[in-house]
Image 1 (cartoon, rainbow, N blue to C red):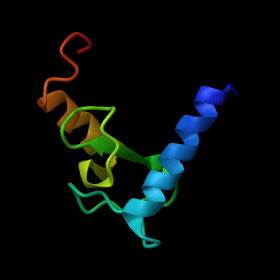
Image 2: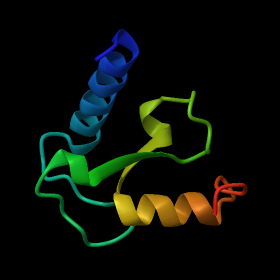
Image 3: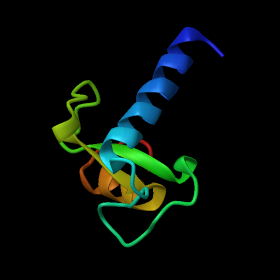
Length: 79
């Protein structure tokens, strides 16, 4: 695992911990509660992946994150 991957994993783990504030990992868009952190994604509300301010981040289950990202037009050339 390269340094970039380690930084990304560390950022993801720290972001999920900060967003959940030690509580359960809950999707902000549906009633889903994760059993494992791998089931959660971090959505950038403004669509800017470089804006990692905590106020711009929200936890979403993988299904909601993909649907919202598609609805916002970020998958224009993929699907």
